[in-house]
Length: 342
Image (cartoon, helix red, strand yellow):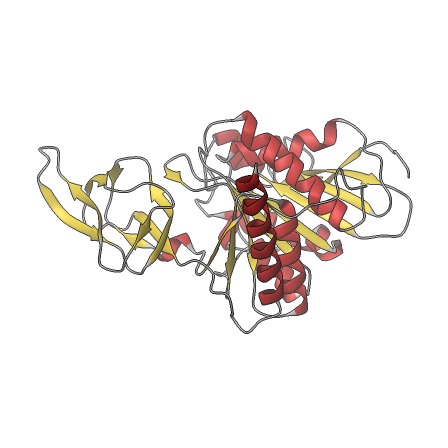
């Protein structure tokens, strides 16, 4: 077991330059093993992912093998402006990967991260939070398309230990996870509620989850014997918030449900009203499942995503992850039985 020191460097331009760059921290055991990349700040207003990633670099860890690379603030301009998108070109960094060396500022950042970080990684952990105007549960998610890299990502998503797991058959365009998929790299991402708020519990969940993943990879020693979540809620479906139910009118969104409520297709889940409370439109569930995202900020414009409904994972999807899901369910049932015996 080794305990080295974090080193820092820049990819791209120096801090303060008009050209984009990213500060990177590295902890290397000096022993053969996986390179794990942890990214925060893809969206500049998601403070939880930035602080969780940055806090990992503040003390050395006893490592068994491999190395860890952390980029706490992927989009520095968006972070400094406290904005989801770039203040320079209005682009969303999470929609332009793998980027373009000669493109816009945001496309250049994606290119730097793709070329210098993701391409040298064996595993990717992308730390996000919900946007300040949208509510999501604390969850870890990944692609589950049946490929070996995706199946490994499912294992690492489970190892993270979040109370909710969200897996997807496909990915939307321009994501870091899409770059990883194309290179056969297992990749997971993490989201939590209260995007503009720092909560001690969420920061601890991120840190503990990252260490569980590192333990599952043999990079650090496991803190305890059982790294499987006790009773995780597992949903499976589209994770592209751009494709969820959108407002058809400008107005104020009034919700009738809470996060993770169960609804059926066609159920009323809210209304868009005007300043007098007059209903402009009724928002209904587009599918049966659980409410996985819900608009928090009441003022909306036509096209604003309001609610995302995702079904619970079926026992059998015909994929290698079926065995992983069965193991999670069996352990959860065993835990419930032990609790009932007390």
